[in-house]
Structure formats: structure tokens, C-alpha cells
Length: 180
Image (cartoon, rainbow, N blue to C red; front, side, top):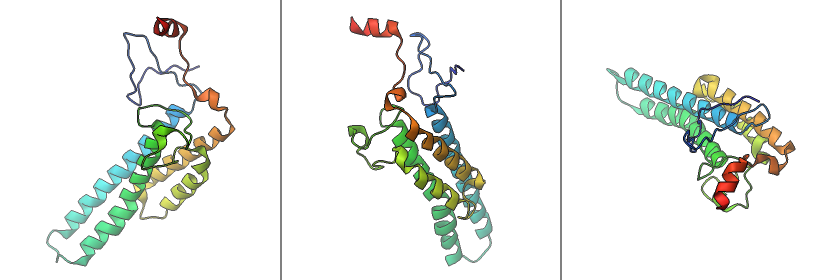
């Protein structure tokens, strides 16, 4: 088992209490967070690059509808929509309180703006969306859709898992201290 001491989600790595988040080959939840965050960064950086090019191309040119068309289609639909979708999937995966694990649509913490986006049954739609983003104005330098599709493939493996395996392991001494 590979032990990673980097807190990828900001969920409370505390060296004084000795809590170490473990990432193993069989635990794909942190891998999903990494893939989704890489996808979001690639969409964001691509959006900033396109915005800079739109502004630079507009300098000295006649200000007309082409700027707004590029702003709406290429930047808005081509970069910001995939960014929003990836952020919604990441939010549903992590949960409102930084809890990572299998998400059921019936849980209270999922009843929000993203609905059941954390359910593994949405993985085929996520993969189809990622493939369609390849053809949408070069979304995320083609890296964003790749990371999003990889996350969808990892998400498909969650369908084969037992939901009890998704619960984080608790050390016995923490259980004994919490019972006091």
C-alpha cells in the first residue's frame, strides 16, 4: 500500500493527531479528486488564454459583434461550461463537508444544485460529455476532456464496489478516544 501524506482535498490532515490520508491502488477516491482538479485547471488556464487572445486581437480593430461572439461561443460555451460541469462533478464527489466517498442521491448532503452528479451511474454521461468536449473549440487544451474522461472511467469502477468499502478506515485508538 502506498501512503501519501499530502492532503489533496484540504480535509484536515493533522500531523499532531497522526491522521494520515492513505491512497492505495484500490482506493480511487483521491485519484478522482486529482483528475477532476487537473481538468478544472486545464479548462481555467485555457479560458484565460482565450480571453487574452480575444482582447489582444481586439486592440486596434473595429469593435463589433465578432468580439462578443468569440466571448460567448469560444470562451463561454467552449471553456467555462466544461469548467462549470467539472466543478459540479467535483463538488458532488467531495460533498459539502469535504467527505469523499460513494454518494447516494437520497443523502441529505447531496440535495443541492448538482443533484445526483456524484452517483456512479452518471459515469457514461460524463465520459460522453468529455468526448464531446474534444470537438468543442479545443476545450481545456484537450487535456481537460482527457482528465474528465479518465475520471469517468475510474468512476465506472465504483459500480463494482461494495458501498461499505468506501468508508474511511478509522484507527482503533481514535475510536477508543472518541468513546471517552
